Image (cartoon, rainbow, N blue to C red):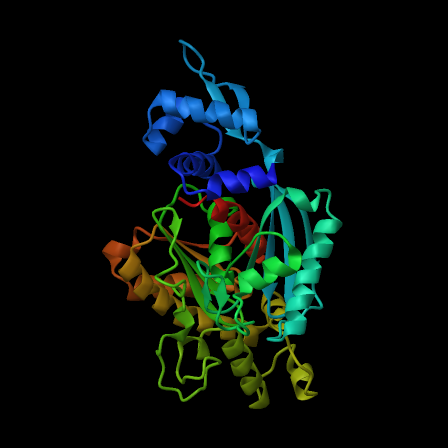
Length: 401
């Protein structure tokens, strides 16, 4: 079934495009009748009926009984057959790796995480990632030949169309997606980690019926994922969302990108840690004081935990980051006029300590007529947004029209 489906949707024929549209509809809208489907993809009912019946016969679509209506004939409901294919998503982060398996319907079948992982720009690290993928699939309840696509999300400037990551593993003549595909022997796609998190929230998280969304990934760095009219926005070559590298400050602080004064030199986990350490060394008191005085390394988790334990200094630092971030979100709201702004990434786990100063600054610095359209909320998927989003992308990338 794997070979047939990939061949059918990848042939480029008119028939394959219609099948993509049908599958794409069921991915985003769930089970529906043929009449609803025909209106959505703008094809006649007889044409859609022919294709749906054929895809039922092939096993990609199931009939799910009658739709209850107020009188008249009860039309049949159709939707994706959960067992007709499976997809793997791999969320690669600087200090951990998480992997998930979903069925054709987008239901999570299995997950695993690697907490002791460190992302390094080395061939050995790429081999490690590939071996992790292969071993996960081997230990899963699904055989490898039923996996239709593996999608890998990771930090960096990524062109999903060409499969290149210009930040990590950009060596040799083979693009990253092709290199991974060759090593694991399964079709592979790649995308940026923040975009995957945004997609996870859109498909399985706190988004309800909103179509225009800005997702803020506030972790060690700062980036955004953009969804316009229900579709991820990549930009021309996939580099949209480099929010943290706006030259916003005249602070002479060197950013990881090599330039000075970038937004994330003041609004990020790196900035939060730097500011906290400097304050403690200058005499401020925190429950983290002893670790810093003993030259022990502190993690972002340490700061988040201290904040949620109501450490006054950490709260002040998070609130300061939140106020600065709110100013910048006000600018985004003025530009994009989104329905929803989602605060995600690890620092969002400080919850109201971050959310309230963000909301206050947004009200203060954005246009009232514009900001009343936008709801600012915390990510509901939290640390799972990345792996869920990359799993969902592993599926949807196969059926983009």
